Image (tube, rainbow, N blue to C red; front, side):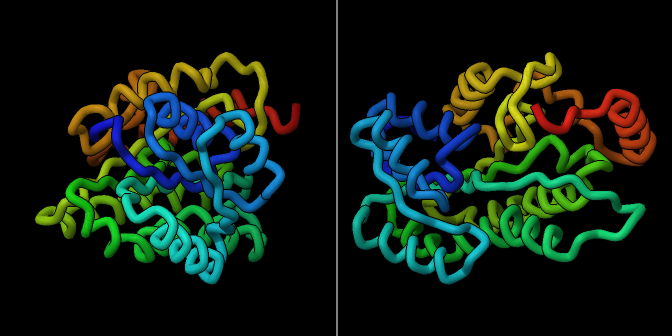
Amino acid sequence: MQLTNNTIFITGGTSGIGRGLAEAFHKLGNKVIIGGRRKALLDEVTRANPGMDAIELDIADPASIERASARLIADYPTLNVLINNAGIMPFDDPSADIDEATALSTINTNLLGPIRMTSALVAHLKKQPRAHIVNNTSILAYVPIATNAVYSATKAALHSYTLSQRFMLRDTSVKVQEIAPPWVNTDLIYKGTDPRAMPLDAFIEQTMQGLATDKEEVVVELAAGLRNNAGPNEHKFVNEFNQFMAENPIPVGA
């Protein structure tokens, strides 16, 4: 991806990885528009980054996506980069009853949200001389964590969708990249001092370096071992990973 001279829309741009990417691209002189549900947070980020714009967006709501995409196309005709970043990560237990509302919210946000957002903008992106779609999945797409089974499943599904999307766009001006973060120290679950969480600034720096290449998948070095899990041994690997996490759980709450 060319990191300059872009008009970029980033969903979930008010905190964490979304805000980190927005600010990194903004510093390079790109026109950046962030999307999010809470206007107060959108205003806070744009005040801190003069020249950055914001659009209210509920990625789980098809009508909100339709309104936001129409405004983007009308107000930013040079829009050529879509970063599907918005996501939620609630805990669940696949060995017990799953809360229906939580499961649907996770699927609508993490999987159907990016699919709908891309669908609304892809015709416009194809008209640009160069364009990019960046889908933010997770290293848990390859090694699911059992305490967040629905989240992991949505990220695996988005990875699969990305593979198909990349193939179908192969003869267009639109390139598709995937970023698959490890555990990054953001407020996706909670922000704390656990040393296993990768510092956000380090993650953003390494991810920007990866996005600057032609790599189809951008995986930081810390997560490479987990990404390389594939093939007939994945069940053993996943079980060992989850046993480790069960013995060393992620704290809930600050």
